[in-house]
Every structure is written in C-alpha cells, then in structure tokens.
View 1 (cartoon, one colour):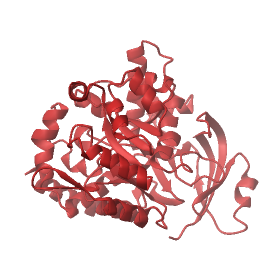
View 2 (view 1 turned 135 degrees about the horizontal axis):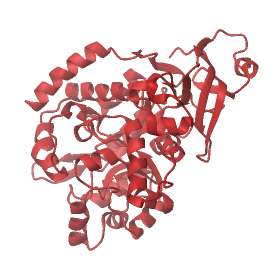
View 3 (view 1 turned 180 degrees about the horizontal axis):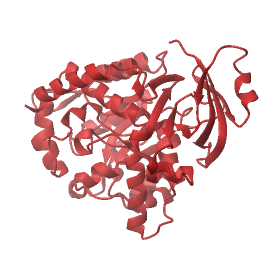
View 4 (view 1 turned 90 degrees about the horizontal axis):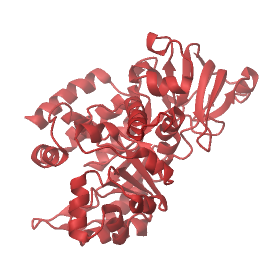
Length: 440
C-alpha cells in the first residue's frame, strides 16, 4: 500500500495518554510518516524533522480538532440492511419473529454489501475500527480490507445439524487465525463467535470455551442483555450468566462482552478479574426496551468498558458520538450526580480503551510511535461556537456530520468529506437492492 507523509498544522490536538488522561494542545503540529505518528506537539521544526527532506502533504488545521479514530466494539455490520425495518419491538420479538427468519435469506453478496455500507457509515462518523459478529466472516473480512478499515471479525466455528445440534469446527477457526492474524495489512483481528448463553445446547459451551483457550482466540459474546436472559439463566442453572459462563470455561482469553445491562456485584467481580472489555450499547438497549446498564458501577468495579452501537437494525445508526453523549447523560441522570463520568472518560472509552479491546493496542492515542489512526473534526460551525472546553465540545456538542476527514494507518479513508476507498454512489444503489431482497 502506498503511503505518504502528512503534516497537520495549527490544529487543536485532543488525545488520551497511555493512562487514559485526556490532554489538549492548541496550535499543535502532528506529523505522520508512512503509517505511524512521528510527532505530536507544538514545534513545526520537530514535526517535519522526521521526513528527512521527503515531500509531505500539509493539512490546514485552523478551526479544526485532531483526535484518535474511534472504536465501535460491538455490532453486526451487515444489519445496516435491516435499518428502519422492524422497530418498536422488544428484543425477543425482534430477534425471533423478524430478524432470524429474514436472516435465512442472507448470502455472501448481501452480507458483503451490508458490511461495506456499515463501514462507510462509520468512516463518515469518525470510527476507524469496529467489532463485527455476523455470518459469512470471510466476505466481512474482505469488505474491511477493501475499505482499508480495521476490523475484529468473529468466526462462527460450528455447524448446525439437521437434528438441531451443533458440530464444532476447530480447524475453521485455526485456519482463519492463521490466514488473518499475520495479514500484511495489520487491519484484521479474529474472534470466536459465541452468540449468548441461551442459543445453544449445554454441551456446546464448554467445547467453545476450550477451543478459544486452546487457540488463544478472543471471544465475542452477548452477556446479560435483558432481564429475561438473566431470569431464565438463574432458573436453568441456578446462577447468573457471567457466573455460568465462567463455569463453562469462558473469560480465559480476551473477551468482548456486549451489553452487560443487568449485572450484580458478583458478576462485575468476575468480569473485572478477567481479560474482558464490556461493550456498552446505550442506544440499542434503550430502543429495544432492554434497560439501562450501570456504567458507573462497572467502572467503579474496575471493568474496562468501551462503546458500541450494536447493529443498525436496533439503533438505527452507527454514530459513536451519539453513544458518547447518551452514555454520559444516562450515567449522570441515573446516579443523580452530574459529576459521574466526565467527558474525558467517555472519549477515552470510545478511543484508547476500545481500540485495545479490539486488539489494536497501538492505536487510540495521538503520540509518537502510535499507529496513524486519526480524525479531523470541524469547529467552525454554530453548534461548536464558542468552543470552550474541546473535550466537552466533542462529547456534548458535536455529531458525526462534523467529521471532515478520517485516516487509518496513515491513509485517508475520508478526506474533506469525500470517501476515498469506497464508491459511495454505487454502494448505496447496491444496498437498496439488497435490502429489498432481504426485507421482502
């Protein structure tokens, strides 16, 4: 992949440090050499020093902010094609009476189109990396590679038999990990797909957990999303989902645990001591009537928490700026304490913590040596004037429409409003046709 040198000049720099503390620098210079950040600070001379006389592209940062690309750590990207199709239903009704029957019509072409549509939407909203839990994982991976987008995609390493039971496919997962773990693009990470504690027969869960541990493979799973899930788990097993999943052998490898809407102290203790990152999805949980996760309690218990949108079928968008704002307001409102969860904590969750949870630990910060995954946000609009505290402005005042540019690995995927790696007009036409086939 051809890369260039870039200099962002006279820009407001906002970034977490390695410990999650947010720093803001006015009139900053950020230089990118190839796919790596070379310098971030206030010296023009030091910024261009690393180019060693080579040409570089200049980006005028006046009335702009530069911050890390965001990480959407839970979603089902091809479900963009279910957007605005099955609304105002609770989760069980939505899944079993609408989504699961329509998903029987899926094929590789539909999933590729829906995935690329989701990626295009995220690029436009400042997101440079995501998690995906869906079908046809190979075409999902190919869509990410085509767009130059970072993705942690899940492999469904099992096959449903005619009798309704599952056969485990360990070689499939091993092959995916071998194929993509060392992919020269470094854009992809592989996880094992485990939908939830309620979808498979009991005997399969220890096998899935053992497979993940044997291959040292991360896991993506929904956990305690609804009170119904928790109640049925207690009735069946005598304990709550995190406790039973731990008994099955999960949480021994890095795990993206989506939702975690209903946790007690014991649940939080189990997750906090394990290599788990919780994916907090406030919009989807509210829209499906599932409930409100106690984000402050999770953080106080020592959990690592990032943000997700869930699928566009239940959100109905993939805008992490909306999720940051909503997560902050819910935490403050439910606690009755405006000091609960600062804007800086939310930005750290959406960037540094999220990137690490996806397996891209060298991203999520703007500092020398980090991967050049960044975005440019406009400040020259009424909703961002006066700017005041840039961090508060990002979380409480901004939205995806203000994202001007997005760079991943030193390559612009969005440049001053124009998608560079996706033919947007062609994609939208194909997505409309795919949605008609899927939702007929």
